[in-house]
Image (cartoon, rainbow, N blue to C red; front, top):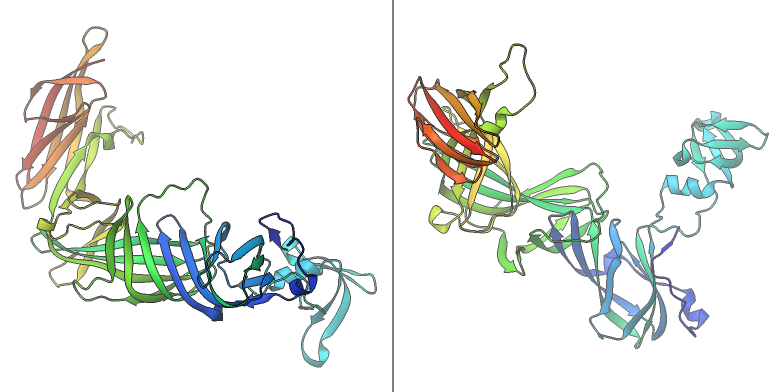
Length: 477
């Protein structure tokens, strides 16, 4: 099946004899390939090949494009003689040779079925009425029987017309000059994506981390890219049509390209309103492969650890038998904050990805402590990571009183009892949310008003001890 992408007439006045034979360009003739891969599961592919064209009308078959190509994005130009090529028609041939496609094309035709092996093999001939891809195969044998889903080896006498050995672009074009030309073909392909993966290792004092970053690049576009120049674009690029997603084939973990400390593989630059990362050197991306390449290596970045009791975590509806309606157990979220500044040993744009936190135990073995997703983070911004929930620091939150005051106000008293079962003091932050106008009437601890709906109460709880915060607020609406 050939899907016509641009409806156009054949070359007006073209010599039919000149159009009979196609000029074929194969991946083996590729001289240069470069890729720009985006976070949103697509890439811009650019290939340069040497192709000999005739002066006048040409039929050019360009083989080996990505299976996930977006044909409407294709651009063809001559680097040898710019402006001398005019494309009149373009077709994308994606009906490639494979057993299912061949059998689909053989429906209604005579086929042969071989059952068994060797001298005892049974050979049946007849007409194929249904192919396996249609829900099951049906063979009408020459003696009139109908065989449903027969097992064995199917044989056909000829390859169906119109099939390609690999996904190909077919152009009908005219060239103002004949002879060899270097052509550049560019297009967008789905099935390629990248993300950053970070590993942060806490020191013994839990005040600094060593941060390393990797680019994790996955190619499911349907073709390989050999010795390619690679660029990665970090940012939220707007697209008005959904990108083509790669087929979820079995992805193999590719080679891990190690980098020495502070010998980063990518050069970063601001580009438009995004950030562009260019690989030093070239790399090969096999199809259905995931490859990792070093992105950054930073040592001794300062971090701050916080335990946060947020009242929003107590608003669930998973009530337990006998639980009080206005009393909740609240878990302490473990938060890490890290300033992305040069003074803190960082100070570079950090692409979106997953950050995983580790710490060495007393025996020196790294233990996994949790992970969080980070968004694209500019320099001089703060990373805030939620990596887990505390084990030994717990809290009970109670709405002690909720008293109407007139028709559009209430006085609400909230008590939060924090219990620290560790042998060291715990610094915690109690966060309360009020979804209307509010003011503090009384409190046991200072309340910092963060915004119109949020108040924070910092609290230090001694080792193996507890502390209770009680705050009374006036809420109006």
